Length: 152
Image 1 (cartoon, helix red, strand yellow):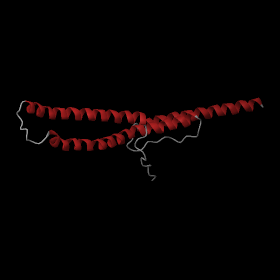
Image 2 (cartoon, rainbow, N blue to C red; image 1 turned 45 degrees about the vertical axis):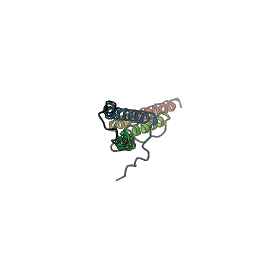
Image 3 (cartoon, rainbow, N blue to C red; image 1 turned 180 degrees about the vertical axis):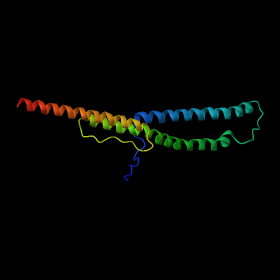
């Protein structure tokens, strides 16, 4: 059995994947800001009112580990997002290439998506369109040949 090619690149469609990763990072940063604001505001309020001992650990000492852990999760989230988006961006890249070759009249093999890719049924539809185009081209070629033979 023929093995499927392994994904060599995760970032295959900068427009779509870049937009999704950017949104994810913006949402993640916004979530961090909101969480830390929620965590820090009681300390500021209690310190202002004199309800917290001034000799206690500083706010940064208390919350830096949380900030470091949250920051270390960001690359993992981006990598996971790229892996996820590759399952639909990759098929679209292959689809564009397939359609470009089909439009140029090149000999095109049926398109196949990898296992785990989204829109696998889309490949079947594209292959049906390709077969229809090839059938029509064969009919046109046969009619052209028939017309040329009748002229002789």
